[in-house]
Amino acid sequence: MSVITAQQIRSAAKGPVNESNLNSVLVALDRYGDMFGLDRPHRLVPYFSQLGHESSDFRFDREIWGPTPAQQRYDIRVDLGNTPERDGDGKKYAGRTAMQLTGKYNYRLFRDWCRRQGLNCPDFVADPDAVNRDPWEGIVPIFYWSERDLNQWADQGDVETLTKKINGGKNGFADRVDRYARLALVVLGYRPDNVMQFQSDNRLDVDGDVGPKTRAALHKALVALVPGEAAKPEIKLAPVTEEKPVPVPVPVTPPSLDAPWWKSKEVIVPAVSGGGASILTAIGGIPWQNLLIVLIALVGIAGFLYWRKNADRKAVAKQVERMA
Image (cartoon, rainbow, N blue to C red):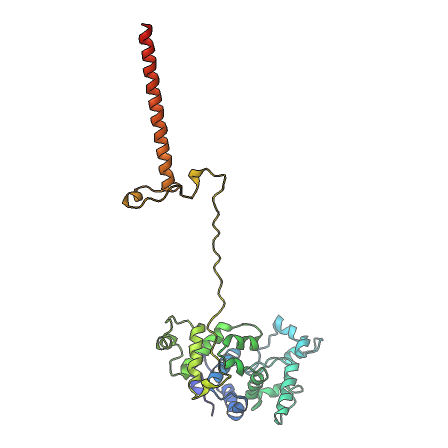
């Protein structure tokens, strides 16, 4: 029996689950999962969460064909083994099973893989619909997972790399992370939406965000469910950092050398400490110390002019007295 149950998957699902499609996956895991290392919680949680995203909670086991413009281009996708002619290969080898096996090349790979495993399988190239019959529907995800060596990334709790290996990019990454967290929480005995309680219990920032640190803690807790598992050399800590934009410092433009000194932001005299200094404030961005120098200079000039004017008046008065 799978270490993750149908009830746990239903509890963690984000919508109604197709029981028949889910059962196909579980039956195949019961029979073949341990042969490929899919018998441990920290591997099965990302396995089921990725399948849950790809199949919308196991509701779809085949691609819905429009055809859309993108699907029409699949008809000539020679990189997927389809012919360069528009002869219907796109629809014939459309995505099937919970892992959405796509393209003639991948159907051939699955057929040859099954035969190497000693499984008496149909010719999926000649009859691609056969992959949706049991037990093949549940074996396709195992084949896909095994051939891409995805256990190594599950052992590291690296949901991001798993997504890239399956999708070729990060399409649907937020939903995949959400599904990973929901199923991990259920397996660990929490409600699927109670990430904040898990964060509190593990002394993390209680923000409800399933970021790298929370995912690392979930991975560690899942590994700990199997005694001795953490000591195995293939088990690694989950990555706890993610790329964030580095703030760019705002450049400070130095004052022009041609600017008058009174407009300079540089203080000409030492700052005055004490309460009196707070009375003087900068006007127009000019430091108050510089304003003080200007004020003293103006008072000095005014005093000099007053003294000079008074002296000239006295000199004229004396000259008039001599002439009288």
